[in-house]
Image (cartoon, rainbow, N blue to C red; front, side, top):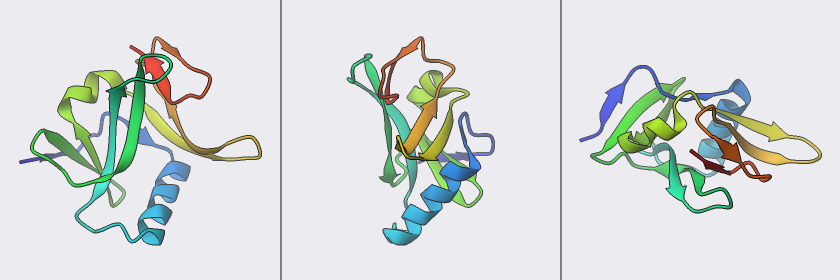
Length: 115
């Protein structure tokens, strides 16, 4: 069973948190779903970020960020510890941005990194 912990290993800026809440409302995301953040192999720098809505699974840790459930598989903590997710809505780019201090290098698109 997933465990709920108080201090999340990553943060969401107020803009990112507000955008997540808008998406939850607009897309009618079920109440038992949370925002899953993780990593997977692939991408131009070796690993890429996962961001989406999902139900918590047994290997997950669940954190509460101002009413939004943040879900993360425990094995990804070392790759995202201290990361901050922001949301940009500008002329050049619109979307979530990952600021990861664990990344040794990143690609130009900002959604891929090496650890």
